[in-house]
Image (cartoon, rainbow, N blue to C red):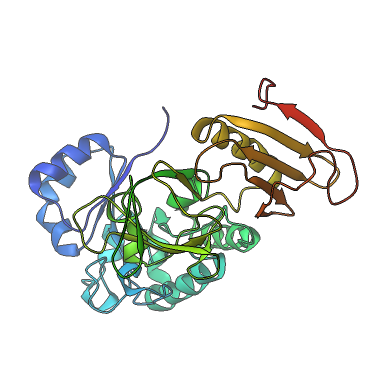
Length: 342
């Protein structure tokens, strides 16, 4: 395919490393000890470039669970554990220090690396700045990133790699879950055919509270529920939410993760997602004058609800919304379920 494969692990067995060398273009060690221990495997390969993961001991991540530079981190080698002249013996340096961060956090990390290693960086063929860059997020300072990469390349004459990871698919789809059962234990409980621990582990680990389309915080709307998963883990809980009407077994709940997609692409994604997951759709209305997309759901968790998408936001609007006009007063075009949009 003409692409490169870069491999890293906090530790290798001899067997796993031998297999990875056959598949990889770059292999990154976590410690000088492993680099030395497998010298024979390194020397047996002419095509693979070998590097080291470096820990600058510079924290930018708020949650310790996701912070590669947290105290006692096992990820990477800190400066005082580098043997003399070790940087001159390797091809590259891997620095993964971020999680869901903007470009200024990478700037500060790189400043810490330069301060610690200085002119030793001139001996490297490549520098891998790792992942944790939300490059595709609205507001990400891409020009800052571009300038930083250009500066590193010009100053040290090396290739620079990034691992966008999450950014490739950031907020680009939906998780759709159905209500399997409802019961009560001091609060209303809804069991879904999904699992926070299995399908949304960051909900428990980060933690964070995912959006559920048409819901609000518990107690805000009339009907409140704790949404739970189907695993045996007692803490497999998505969160507490409230709805305009009571949930019913079989209702579908939509967890949108697409809020930062540009508006032009978002219209198509919404139409496709609702067509696939909450069909049949009764009608869709699109108004170019005020950038509104309205979708009427004919069954499921939002039966007969009209979802109005305007000005980069969504809101659940009652069925009193006129299908023939919009906020600007302009007429909207109506697509029926037999049109290409439905």
